[in-house]
Image 1 (tube, rainbow, N blue to C red):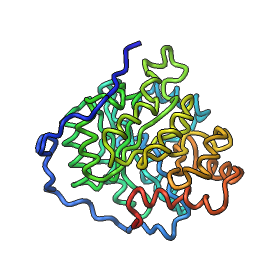
Image 2: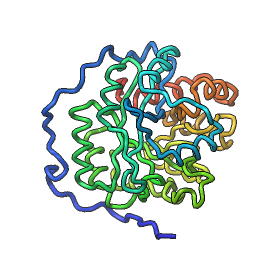
Image 3: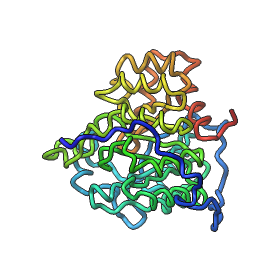
Image 4: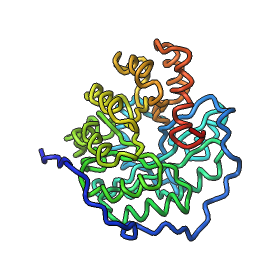
Length: 325
């Protein structure tokens, strides 16, 4: 297997940001139809996927999509449009973070445009929060794109999937991108642990699980100390590592997406209820796991009543800047 690069210290500062994009916006952000009202929400789901574009283009190749559906026992599930996702969450008085994955370098499959996702979410700003995805292999061009997406399109964070994007999170190739994201004050969400994408395909479809070891993200947290980071999913087989990183680094959070809560490792539940009660976030992985199923199983976990609102809404509201403090 190819060695995974590890970072030791942060590259020296350039003294200017002009190499990764200017801070001036040239196009105003879309005007939201209705502002998001946190107080009226039941929950904020920080992990949902835009699987199909307006013209029917899928976020994954048919082979990888089929493997994911098999892994999640979700054959026959519809790929909702963003409008349909908005309706689904509005009916439940929930908000949802929406993103795709840009893995063009590794897969050759064209992404869904970040601009389309941002514009579609802006039309449903009472319930949807747009994140973007930029392939780290795009280097400084990707960093400039990230700045533009935040400043001109209202993007509120970025999604990385190291295994699908075929990069180690601590590869310095990605550091110009992280520098921009840190400077903009928006979070970076990293897939961690095993993935259903490529599962069961010969060779896993070429997808390497080792890229999604949360200890690689620990290097990023050390080198970018003000960057807000979310470790997505119960991080099998590295759950203890994820808990260690989140307890050690003050701006590292964990989302609980991708698994039914009834399968959560016991130590994850204990930490969510105690040491990490202010840093654990509700996420479903919609549409392969619905918020209804996730919340029904979450009700059965031994989590204290005073902690539940933090996990379901308050921690995300604070992280995403939807509440002061």
